[in-house]
Image 1 (tube, helix red, strand yellow):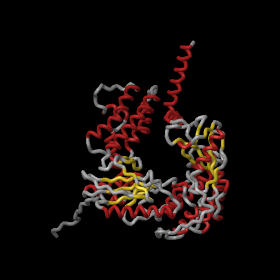
Image 2 (cartoon, helix red, strand yellow):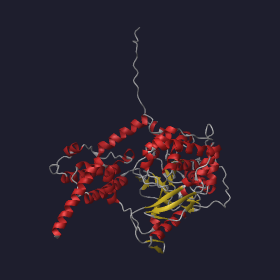
Image 3 (cartoon, helix red, strand yellow):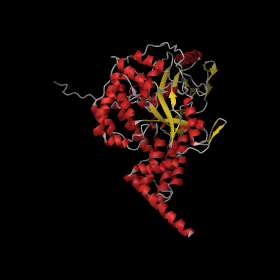
Image 4 (cartoon, helix red, strand yellow):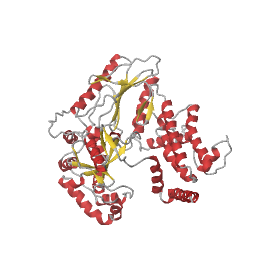
Length: 558
């Protein structure tokens, strides 16, 4: 009987796996739900702790999360704001005092809703709004425009759910190892997303060019490309470059609302639209939700509402007035690095002056820099490097001698990317091990290929235009990642391949390219988007020169 039960259990499991594999084409959501369930644990432990206190009941646990997440907010209600404008901001050509929404915009937003998202505090599911768009578009259109014309955002739309997500896999029982993810109600999210799309094109001209976060046609790649080119040019001239990587403490959650409203007025936002933005930000509440349990409401006294479409725009406006006179800066949202060529003591003093300017800006705007996470790196190819110390509020910043991770790419002091390639190989091998363990009974080549391309190849290709190697040895190290997967899939799917033979027939059968060919294709695609104006990176574009042959249309001998 026991052997029969094992046999039937095995048979049923194989049938289940076959259904999962066929769902890749029929219902991809179920397929990736199975894969993601193997990758992460979405359940909280039954017993959790914060510092020395332990909590065993679901209600105590979510209330502890609520208190912990609310501790990051600052209460500026009874504090006098001593904000002083340090640098004149960019202003709008014409003031933005009103905004209106078209009926078609509401209809289109409802039709683009995905049925996969969870409902917010109003518990209205996506599929209801999407399927009823012909009926509810008109009343929502009226409500949205009425809200904008009165300069009031409804209080019932200011509540959001908070889901605790682990920062890492270590000690999941510690409340401090979780970060909050906001879940907004769908109707207000549609509302403010339409408003954000309408005002972004207007405000885009106000945001400084150094900012690459949340900007159309800009990304982490354009940020790192400008940075790498600056370092490369300096090293080719024999100069050194000092870089200071900064870290703001809970930047999105610490914004002083009064200072933000002042800055909105300064750039030209006024009238009913300014009143609407103020109403949108103030008096918000958050509730930690887990399964059927809700925490006590959290009053949000500072910051911008994360999870909304307007929050990134408001944050960019808040930090838009950071100016340096002696060094260059590059930003991606709140990640900022300032750098300059430092060949002598005077150059280092100029960089220190800009660091002092940043510290003064933080004091003026009620921001704090985490000095323990701010780091210095000197890029140089000299045998003997002259290093200078930099101080922030009297505390010497840490100097990094090895590689440092910048927006997902590891940079070392000699601008080599061996450490980044090593990191790619380690991460890819880890996920390949996950595939071998959890997909051991898979025999569908399309399913295995999809998992590989999504989880492994994406790691090998991120930012390749920055770090793509020219040495054949490094190329082969990266190529071994894909070759390891090819050996696995040929065995699991019974694809004939002679031992120690070329991988080309297997690549052709699976319709795959080598990783080197993929990097070249991505470089060409990036260049095409750059030349066609779909990537905003003028510094890199200026490095290209085009030779246009001139052909006389008439003969010279006339």
